[in-house]
Image 1 (cartoon, rainbow, N blue to C red):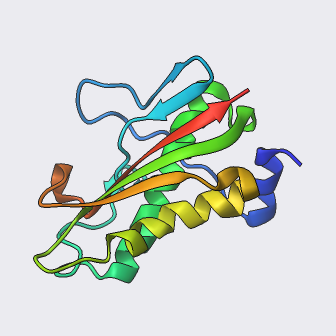
Image 2 (cartoon, rainbow, N blue to C red):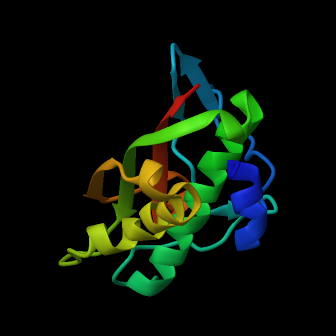
Length: 151
């Protein structure tokens, strides 16, 4: 089964690549690895939420936002090399704009990690960091970057 057919089976459509907000590209390939830029929870050109997780944004909302970040990362990979060239998800790095005392960053970033598991199965199992930060670009609650191995 191809990745594209798995996406179709799951009813998942990759979004358009989010235009860079500064001087960078959405994804870059070196050897057999593709690194994505940090992806915000943007859909149809709009940031889906703003604020700190644990204050203006609930952990459950942030988990859904992390999933959108994961979709945006896959869109960047697809635009660069084609989604069917992905053979392994290597690493996910997630940043959570956290209110004081919020320590649920791993659960938030599960939104992206679980998406990758749904799509890639065993090849979606990855190393990961989930980091709480004080601020993210555009007051986004979550940002996710992904590293994948490609054929």
